[in-house]
Length: 105
Image 1 (tube, rainbow, N blue to C red):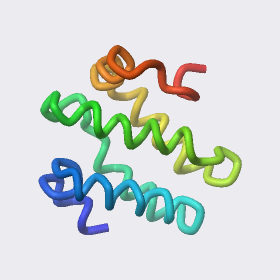
Image 2: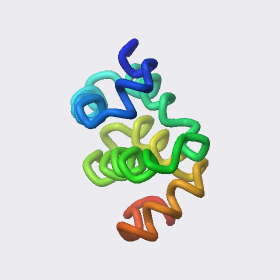
Image 3: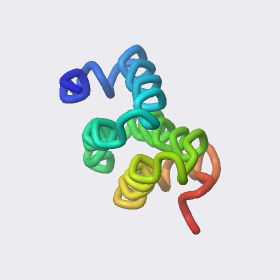
Image 4: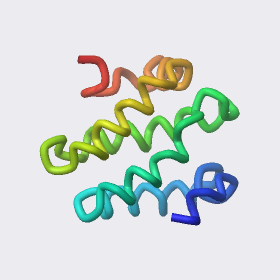
């Protein structure tokens, strides 16, 4: 979990984002509490540099697509809340890559 706090490594590098994504997917069904703590690093997406919006929103959109909301409701809903709380980053992502399934109900 400490790795995620180093945003320059965990969010701003391709290798860090790949590691973070695989960790979130593996951990989501095992320990929702720890996964939720890791997701906090995504909170201020709109305040991050625009170049990181697409890959980071993509990670969260991928979680919504891959996770079963019934199996990991806390993780799924936390990812969804983070996306809804960062409208500028989501708008840019959806403009370039299309709507995020499960986000706008």
